[in-house]
Image (cartoon, rainbow, N blue to C red; front, side):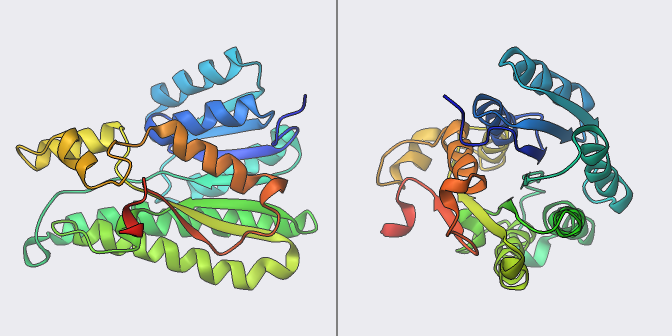
Length: 255
């Protein structure tokens, strides 16, 4: 039985760990051909090895999404290798350094926005141009956050960047819907990833149990649970869904 992404060519950034790696494995299971990107080449290679073990075609590239030439090269490589680009998951991101707004350094502000927001814009810019060149059609999913819907004390740059991703998602969906290009975002809650581990390290004394108690489901999410949502949004089964920053948050925003 064919998977929901059977034959589609997909680009995933931030594919070296966490949500990116889990999503790559799910895309492979669902039949996609993959271009995997991460700033840590070794991590992207490990993900590619797992994807190939699942029987999928793929390649990996080292890329810094805050550099236009790197992003432009990713899309060009996808087209040179597989002939087209059907869907993309713009997932690369960092949490930055924790600080109250008046103590956030200029360096941290610019670095977080360069990767989390400008990087997503660069990816969309290149991906949409290619999809239009192909004659239209395609699906893009961006990684926002629950911090892209609500405030996040101690993370002004991160919160601003993720709100920006949600805004970019809505704007682009209005611009390119007539071309059959669907653009959505996922807004993960606390997910068991290396990033969450670092955040807990920053906030001394915070435990997984404390994060879990804030969720109606009373547990952390797993990276695969985000990946399943992304795969659905990129598939034809979500053909009438666009412009949605989708919370995948254990019910946090239902409270």
